[in-house]
Amino acid sequence: MTVLNNFFVTTPIYYVNDKPHIGHAYTSIAADVLTRYHRLAGRDSFFLTGTDEHGTKIAESAAAAGKTPQALCDEVVEQFKETWKALGIGNDYFVRTTDARHVAAVQKLLTVLKGAAAPDGREAVYPGVYEGLYCTGCEKFIAENDLVDGMCPDHKKPPQLLKEKNYFFRLQPYLPILKGMVEKNELVILPDERRREVLGLLTTGLPDFSISRESEKWGIPLPFDPAQTAYVWIDALPNYISAVGYGDDPQQFDRWWNRAEVVHLMAKDILKFHTIYWPAMLMAAGIKLPDRIFIHGFFTVNGEKMGKSMGNMIDPRKMVAIYGRDATRYLLLSQYPFGVDGDVKEKEFAAKYNSDLANDLGNLVSRVAKMMIQYCDGKVPAPCADIPGQKEMMEIAVDLPDAVYNHVCHFRLTEAFAAAMNLVRGTNKFLEDSAPWKLAKAGKTEQVGGVLYTAGELLRIAAILLYPIMPEKVREIRSVFDLQDENLTLDSARTWFNLPVGNRIALKDSIFPRLDPKTIPLLVPPKAEPVAVDLVSFEDFGKVCLRVAKVIAAERVPKADKLLKLQIDLGSEKRQIIAGIAQQYPPEEMVGKNIIVVANLQPATIRGIESRGMLLAAKSEGILRLLTVDGDIPPGSSIG
Ligand code: ME8
Image 1 (cartoon, rainbow, N blue to C red):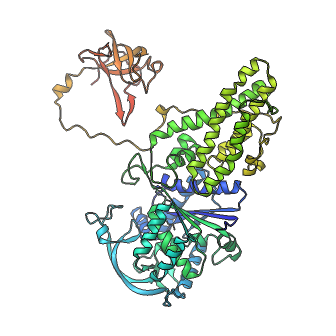
Image 2 (cartoon, rainbow, N blue to C red):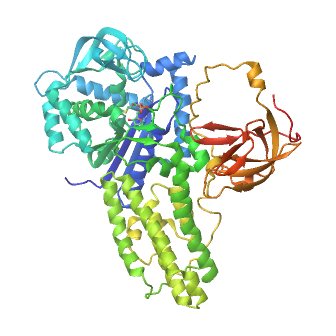
């Protein structure tokens, strides 16, 4: 297959019945990353995203919110646009299915389809009657045996029985042709598991599908029968061509559709529409098919399916507020391999941020810059040939840009980031092994410069390779070394000695400040434990003596990483208690706190140390937070 130089990537256009969540963000970030890599490699690229605004689902959400559908769309679209801005998503065009341009293109396509002949010689579009169960949540008909307890398994609501006049698309004669194209990889479907799934569907056969609705008015009227509204998917799929000039700009259409490598990105939930219905419609209209369709993984959050009713839909803007724009992009895309289903674990965000970004990358930037300031007069020093380990590092670095770009061309984004991060780690190790601080002490100035030049050059290369996932931070890193944007290219990463000697170092704040996991707000509220069913009497509760206590001293219990030994003041007496909070609260943070203790517990011996009482803490899914008392109240005060 010859790969065309123009690269055109699309995300699904998202429904606007609710605000954007990290599932939408995942695809949009991936498309943004692909575009940036291809641009780094010098390919002309176009990145399209947008919103799907017609259909019953949106009309119902608008009615429930007491708004017109258009008003609801306008509001939610702004949220999508703001979210993409907050995430640094640099789409070239934002298509809305309510745009006049899109509406005109869909009507043109429908007119073409109505006049087209299917491969068996009959008309590609014909009128008929449809009767079936329809789920508005999925915006599709659902087979009776797919229902669970009479309800759609995904949306947990009963489908509606629809019987009405519809127009149909004659899909069947296209299926064998499509099958041949998928088999010959003229239409590439990736990963292979999804390709096989599609081939299975094409082999077992699918019925013709209806392309219009009589009962739904929120949509695009069929040009040849305005009493009918285009089915929302028939309205949505052509966004990929309406946005690049189908029907109104032949030159643009030629550039970004006919003469571009067209890549559609999405998750498996909408596989059939994109790999079967859409290519068949294009064939009927005599339009080139997309080149590659990549189905990335569908993820769960903290082990559960993401959904409004689950209360676990994470707003990407919340993540940006905690981790920053670029770290959010990195954390979301590097949690599990791109292309397989996975789980987004909230607890891992902070750990990964601290290890990969604060420790590995952030530290490398500040170490190299600080040492250039300290030992090299605040400038990039001259390279030096005779540095142990340098040649090996150069060899690794020289091959890396092509290896990373090759991963990207095959949608192996996780591997691409990992390869760049390995270079960062390798550079940290090179610095430790070379120990320029020791060389400086020994007065070996030229070698100090040589080591730092190599480290800086390796960092420059790694940063270019990380630019697509963290564009803002990489620009910040480059500005520390006074590097200009025009050299932000893959070619520049391929060549050594592109870090100009003598550039001034301008180190500002740390690029990725370390985060204290304890202070990070939760993105998904933890599920509360059920309240105990065994009720206790007032009398029994009254037996528990709760008191305010001031912590006067705290130390760790040796060889017990969870335990602290606390000396507390209970007003009338001083006591020692053992508490299992050391992982969340270091001893120095405890001193001076007014905590709450159960004061009349029988003494216990924990790890050979006596504990006379127990402090109270709130606990949820491994997270502990101390109960403390607000304001001034003397130790020993009772609690009731
Ligand atoms: O289906 N994991 O829109 P939509 C990964 N309007 N990706 C996810 C995800 C998850 N848990 N949840 C959502 C529609 N996505 C139609 C598309 S296109 C012509 C019309 C992403 O708002 C993923 O890309 O339901 C998925 O395919 C898409 O959002 C579905 O978005």
